[in-house]
Image 1: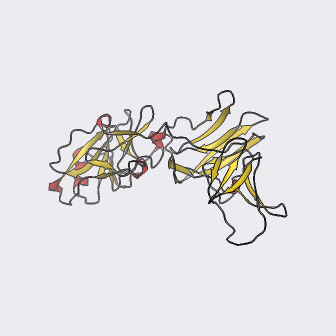
Image 2: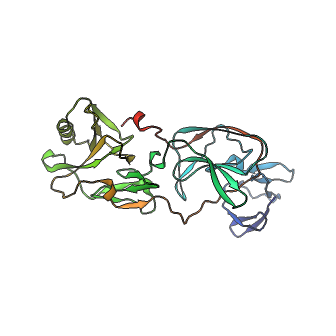
Image 3: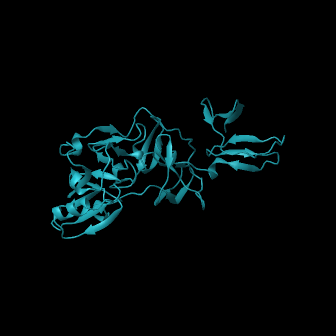
Length: 321
């Protein structure tokens, strides 16, 4: 059990010889002089107890991005991931099933800042958290909203976001805010052109038109003459699939993709063929940062968890563009 001291405008918890700084997550909004005691339980649950020894608040009812053993995930409660280290977001549903029989290593289930759900076990000898489980066949570039809008993600070997030529990053510290064009577009097709991104697609890109059996030129002209079309994806799989897009989100490049994306730009804008490998890049992951998570002793565990996680594309061939 930890010792909790009131200090200044915050609360400091001291389990053993380490210090955790807590922010205000709950308040009674009253001025009662009744004594309330804060306890950090062995389970990792921070509780407030009144004079009748009743729990009036507990951190287990307000999870962030992590579940601890014995911590329930009840109705109307969600896990919320970070956009990156320090920024939070949430999205669609995802499921996780795990069984842990008997005592074992300390474990935690976390939606990491890259949107991936992972189960970690603590290696007592090294003091490091090791990944025990993560979704098979899914890389971080397949997480919805990682580099949007306009940004393109490449996984090699870590997720890396880039802006196409003619676009700038919106926020140096947050790739989820994507990129913005350095130009303004008119609706005059004579003043417009396209840049092409090979082996690239923009998933969940608000396709407002789909054509099958179209030539590349026909697909191009359709977008060129539609003021609401920001670009199009054309599939080189022999079927002539044309996807007109009003918004370009979730850019992802992989050499096996048969698609080429064409982004609308002003005519006369000198831009070389935008192969993603030549784009300005920034590592999405900053190894110098760390995530603080309260841990607990393991209990017998049989979890069936449904969480509000990020939208994940499991297989490229089954994703609509």
